[in-house]
Length: 105
Length: 248
Image (tube, rainbow over the protein chains, first blue to last red):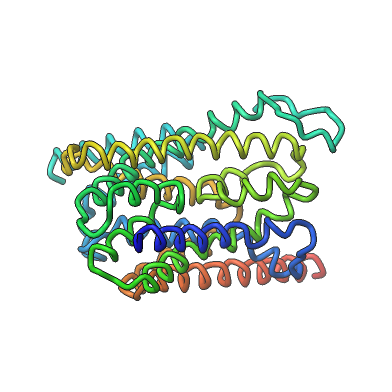
């Protein structure tokens, strides 16, 4: 029972975070400056989630020489930048990772 | 992209073409959810203190991958209920900013959509919605969002179910979960629309790395705050520089 209540609690805090503004509809209006700054939430957040996941336990040491993960993520970044297509970027990124791991680079 | 709807603005009835568009554009972003949800599932199965049914149900009760992973790991370490819920809140509080950023695009949206949309506003759904043109018809926006949301939901629940039922059968050497950082790299690149966006990403990434050992996801929050501030300041500076260039 305790586990269920914990997960329901987790679900509620998550739902109301997501709904914090949307649920209140057109009644809430943020100041212009804040609304403009929210345009940078996406790049800042996605980078903040991605970077520690790629560098892993080795940290900055995984940059020189680059680990297969670092190499693959850079290739995937180039792919998505050029094609704007996530499916292609995912495929190229994963294949590069396997190749780099296999080559022992 | 399908043709925009030409119906009156208050007609929000089901729009199949945009629903399908939402599914198709959501699929590649949802694919990394497969190995990721699978990992959440088999960790639930391996954690003695979580009963499998509750752990499985958390897939749709919480419906947020990284925070579910954190919750399972904390419960495996016998963390208190409050610590688990608070950690999940901190990890997911970035969605407050997604919600604020999305809201102006939903002007005029009905309550049923706001209630359902709040449940489905995950990272990828937000990223896709942010990339849509600002003048898009509300009807098209709503149905493509729901198409994307439904796709993520089905894939996520299927993956968690599979993980709970069959357990850890994918060899770790396949590194399938690396598709998750690739996904976020892709979302980052697609979300960058100008120079200040690049600055926001660089600052966010660097601060997140430096603060990676901060407790309960506080490092992530700090990184987002710094990145957003940096991007905004850069935008202001760039604008005033352009104004000076115009006046001289």
